[in-house]
Length: 71
Ligand SMILES: [Zn+2]
Image (spheres, rainbow, N blue to C red):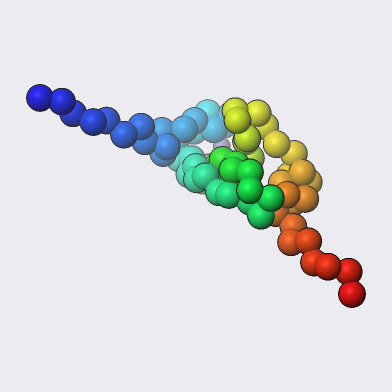
């Protein structure tokens, strides 16, 4: 018998308040990189990580930006 245990992302712990009401999702940004977005329901801390490294919100926005051709 083998059980497959799927790690539950909801077990993430907030780095700010140590609460465990953290929602964590993985998103793929428009530049093709995938980042983990975590949002704490207790203290509303939001964080972005890529490959385990904290990402600055400005770099996330830069990656998520759609590059429109200059008119
Ligand atoms: Zn928190």
